[in-house]
Length: 441
Image (tube, rainbow, N blue to C red; front, side, top):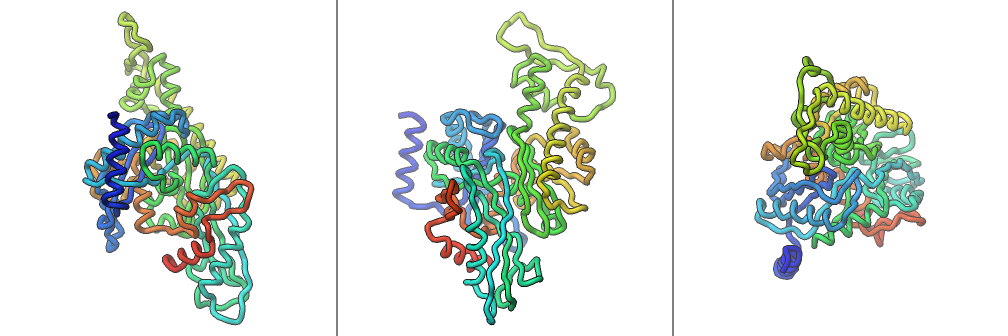
């Protein structure tokens, strides 16, 4: 019996014996690594809003390139291995996982809905009607909603209201942010997870959940931009007034820097990644013209010697790509009209943000204060899993424990079809919206 068949039989037997496990599992599917965080329900400390990850597992990514799955079997096997390692640490087995991704051409749209009010206090029913009025406007051919988040409520001319219930007015308005991914990517992710014999609980935008893990609450209130620099993509989540207000993504990441190094130095991808990690930098340093580096040659010719080049050449390959990526993201944010606050700072997450000099380049490109983010709400992680590369997986757990809750549940979004018809986020959107209101307002 193969390992995959054995895993399937084990999971089916466990599911029949124990039913649904009271654990939350997050998978960050990237081009460089696949990581899994598992949290038990007793791992949430509401007193100081921190979490305890019961298990963490990660493996080198396979079958993923440029933020997209290119080999379903390899990607599903990597997911299965990462989940299995986390399960072994946690001492549990999970049935379903939520996948964080920066691919799928993430986009966001802001929509609003308005309803008239009678001569009575605003009720749950009025809030549901406003949400319905906004959702009825959504038409996203070939795309799937990943998040439907309330940005703000307004009563007449008074805006920025968190909870309008029991207030009086003539008009109630709500603004929603809809973050969507490609329908094809969504379906492929689901098939990949199911091939690993796991239940697909939905997809989340990596920059959004990375921000939840890395940003302070006052940063969200005053305004901040979280830039998630992954292996296959670079994406950004813009926060203002405590809410997510925009998402942007580029299909360029750290793996493209590695490929540039491999081409420029005529070395292998593995050799380029090692050189980038050990000697790479996006800014100049002293004596780099005289400092030489060695790279393994391509191929398996035993007579071929190592590739020797000055470190300045390596910097000359890395710096333009990093600067170009950040400039493209800056220009995309400007062109989108994203409401970036004048004093908003930048927080960098993702594995590619750890490259030396990236923070300094970001300061120059955006002309804003920049810091490196870490999963601050999970304080007891091992050193190897506590860096910027693990913010997305930690953020999925944070979102489940502390929100923000969404106007439509994740399970409803996983079953909704956003193609040529207006959004139908579940079989009964009124009931879903009402349930959200009861739980979160």
